[in-house]
Length: 139
Image (cartoon, rainbow, N blue to C red; front, side):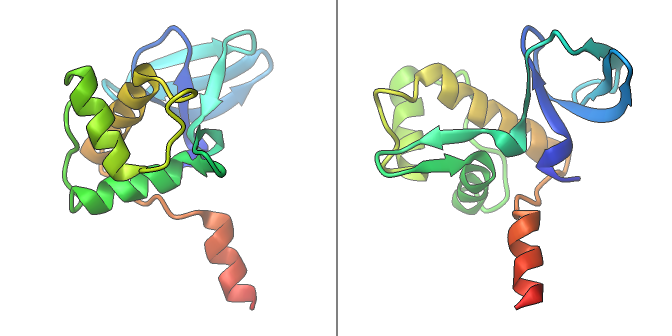
Protein backbone atom coordinates (compact mmCIF):
# COMPACT_ATOMS: atom_id res chain seq x y z
CA UNK A 1 0.00 0.00 0.00
CA UNK A 2 1.42 3.39 -0.96
CA UNK A 3 1.31 6.61 1.03
CA UNK A 4 -1.08 7.97 -1.62
CA UNK A 5 -3.91 6.07 0.07
CA UNK A 6 -2.96 6.88 3.69
CA UNK A 7 -4.73 9.86 5.28
CA UNK A 8 -4.54 11.98 8.38
CA UNK A 9 -7.94 13.43 9.28
CA UNK A 10 -8.02 16.55 11.43
CA UNK A 11 -9.71 15.92 14.75
CA UNK A 12 -9.35 12.13 14.44
CA UNK A 13 -6.46 10.24 16.01
CA UNK A 14 -4.21 7.94 14.00
CA UNK A 15 -4.08 7.23 10.30
CA UNK A 16 -6.70 6.05 7.83
CA UNK A 17 -6.72 4.23 4.54
CA UNK A 18 -8.81 5.67 1.71
CA UNK A 19 -11.32 2.98 0.73
CA UNK A 20 -13.87 4.59 -1.59
CA UNK A 21 -15.13 7.94 -2.80
CA UNK A 22 -18.73 9.01 -2.30
CA UNK A 23 -20.71 11.97 -3.62
CA UNK A 24 -20.21 13.93 -0.42
CA UNK A 25 -16.69 12.80 0.51
CA UNK A 26 -15.17 9.36 1.00
CA UNK A 27 -15.00 6.27 3.17
CA UNK A 28 -11.84 5.72 5.23
CA UNK A 29 -10.74 2.78 7.37
CA UNK A 30 -8.74 3.25 10.55
CA UNK A 31 -5.34 1.56 10.48
CA UNK A 32 -5.60 1.16 14.26
CA UNK A 33 -8.86 -0.75 14.66
CA UNK A 34 -10.21 -1.30 11.13
CA UNK A 35 -13.37 0.72 11.74
CA UNK A 36 -14.75 2.50 8.71
CA UNK A 37 -16.02 6.03 8.77
CA UNK A 38 -17.58 8.40 6.32
CA UNK A 39 -15.62 11.62 5.89
CA UNK A 40 -17.22 14.68 4.34
CA UNK A 41 -15.38 17.04 2.04
CA UNK A 42 -15.59 19.70 4.77
CA UNK A 43 -13.08 17.77 6.93
CA UNK A 44 -9.45 18.83 6.82
CA UNK A 45 -7.69 15.78 5.35
CA UNK A 46 -4.00 15.37 4.52
CA UNK A 47 -2.61 12.66 2.26
CA UNK A 48 0.73 11.47 3.63
CA UNK A 49 2.38 11.49 0.19
CA UNK A 50 1.65 15.24 -0.05
CA UNK A 51 3.21 16.23 3.29
CA UNK A 52 6.75 17.61 3.51
CA UNK A 53 8.98 18.90 6.31
CA UNK A 54 10.85 22.20 6.04
CA UNK A 55 14.63 22.27 5.99
CA UNK A 56 16.87 25.28 5.46
CA UNK A 57 17.32 24.42 1.77
CA UNK A 58 14.15 22.60 0.65
CA UNK A 59 11.03 20.75 1.70
CA UNK A 60 11.69 17.05 2.29
CA UNK A 61 8.78 14.71 1.49
CA UNK A 62 7.44 12.69 4.40
CA UNK A 63 8.22 9.43 2.55
CA UNK A 64 11.91 10.41 2.56
CA UNK A 65 11.84 11.06 6.31
CA UNK A 66 10.12 7.70 6.86
CA UNK A 67 12.89 6.03 4.80
CA UNK A 68 15.54 7.71 6.95
CA UNK A 69 13.83 6.60 10.16
CA UNK A 70 13.53 3.08 8.74
CA UNK A 71 17.26 3.02 7.91
CA UNK A 72 18.19 4.42 11.33
CA UNK A 73 16.03 1.85 13.13
CA UNK A 74 16.92 -1.00 10.73
CA UNK A 75 13.23 -1.51 9.92
CA UNK A 76 12.16 -1.62 13.56
CA UNK A 77 9.91 0.69 15.58
CA UNK A 78 11.15 4.24 16.29
CA UNK A 79 11.20 5.92 19.70
CA UNK A 80 7.88 6.77 21.29
CA UNK A 81 6.20 10.00 20.21
CA UNK A 82 5.59 10.62 23.93
CA UNK A 83 9.30 11.10 24.73
CA UNK A 84 10.52 14.40 26.16
CA UNK A 85 10.90 17.48 23.96
CA UNK A 86 14.71 17.24 24.12
CA UNK A 87 14.75 13.55 23.12
CA UNK A 88 12.38 14.18 20.22
CA UNK A 89 14.44 17.12 18.95
CA UNK A 90 17.65 15.14 19.26
CA UNK A 91 16.16 12.14 17.45
CA UNK A 92 14.70 14.30 14.70
CA UNK A 93 18.01 16.09 14.14
CA UNK A 94 19.66 12.68 13.63
CA UNK A 95 17.05 11.77 11.02
CA UNK A 96 16.87 15.20 9.35
CA UNK A 97 19.91 17.24 10.46
CA UNK A 98 19.03 20.46 8.62
CA UNK A 99 15.35 20.73 9.57
CA UNK A 100 14.17 24.30 10.11
CA UNK A 101 13.79 24.69 13.89
CA UNK A 102 11.64 27.80 13.42
CA UNK A 103 9.05 26.09 11.24
CA UNK A 104 9.11 22.47 12.44
CA UNK A 105 7.53 22.18 15.89
CA UNK A 106 7.78 19.38 18.44
CA UNK A 107 4.12 18.58 17.68
CA UNK A 108 5.15 17.96 14.04
CA UNK A 109 7.96 15.66 15.15
CA UNK A 110 5.54 13.74 17.37
CA UNK A 111 3.16 13.22 14.45
CA UNK A 112 5.91 12.05 12.10
CA UNK A 113 7.27 9.56 14.64
CA UNK A 114 3.79 8.37 15.64
CA UNK A 115 2.79 7.92 11.99
CA UNK A 116 5.99 6.00 11.22
CA UNK A 117 5.32 3.66 14.15
CA UNK A 118 1.70 3.10 13.04
CA UNK A 119 2.79 2.29 9.48
CA UNK A 120 5.65 0.06 10.67
CA UNK A 121 3.29 -1.87 12.98
CA UNK A 122 0.89 -2.45 10.06
CA UNK A 123 3.71 -3.64 7.80
CA UNK A 124 3.47 -0.62 5.50
CA UNK A 125 7.18 -0.09 4.96
CA UNK A 126 7.55 0.69 1.27
CA UNK A 127 8.34 4.39 1.28
CA UNK A 128 9.69 4.55 -2.26
CA UNK A 129 8.32 7.24 -4.54
CA UNK A 130 6.24 5.45 -7.21
CA UNK A 131 6.93 8.26 -9.70
CA UNK A 132 10.71 8.04 -9.19
CA UNK A 133 10.78 4.28 -9.70
CA UNK A 134 8.63 4.63 -12.83
CA UNK A 135 10.93 7.22 -14.38
CA UNK A 136 13.95 4.93 -13.97
CA UNK A 137 12.28 2.28 -16.10
CA UNK A 138 11.67 4.75 -18.94
CA UNK A 139 15.31 5.79 -19.23
